[in-house]
Length: 107
Image (cartoon, rainbow, N blue to C red):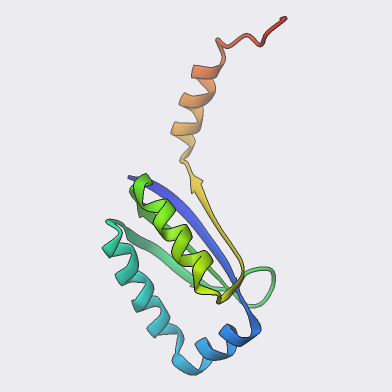
């Protein structure tokens, strides 16, 4: 299963609501969502200011990403949201080795 880094910045209204609702309750809601999509959250971390309010590391099947993006984009609670696939060093080394035999056109 692929791993993804998820980062979001709440709108001011949503930031106020999550403060009132409770941070733990938002984690529980998101854990249930990722489980329903066939994955799991490995890390769920709140930040102290800056560009993001929340970051997470999760495992999800690639087929779940369009659904997750639709939910995140449609929620209307995020001023900024990104979902980025991440890889370990061994995977990156293998990809680099596989690409070393490629010759661009004209070279």
